[in-house]
Length: 145
Image 1: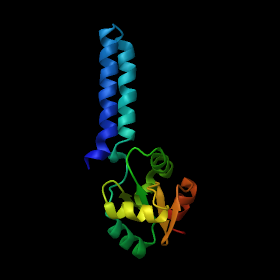
Image 2: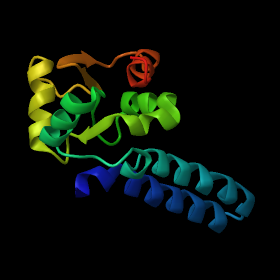
Image 3: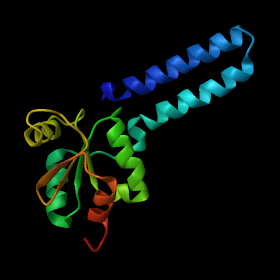
């Protein structure tokens, strides 16, 4: 769990260091501009941006019942962030599995990607799709799909 927070914490620390250096150099305006940028980047890369992750087995069980896609992701992945942001509110309709938090989820991703932990990997109807187009995933989340 701690690994998921390394990048956000580093961004907060770097932002604080840059802002402090700017204040010491007599540039409080620049510090006020830099700090929110670093905080926004930290927030965007935190696990809090994604819907609550569940275990891979539970996600696969739920997907078999309701037909919704299972999205395997990891914090800090720019492609996962792109998918999450482009899905918008409909992202909560998918089942999300953090592969850094769930070893079984990481195993599913490795099995689908020739041993690589390439994310996002989206499983729809038991078929994996690596880094799919967000528009396509949104279609899979729609009630008519």
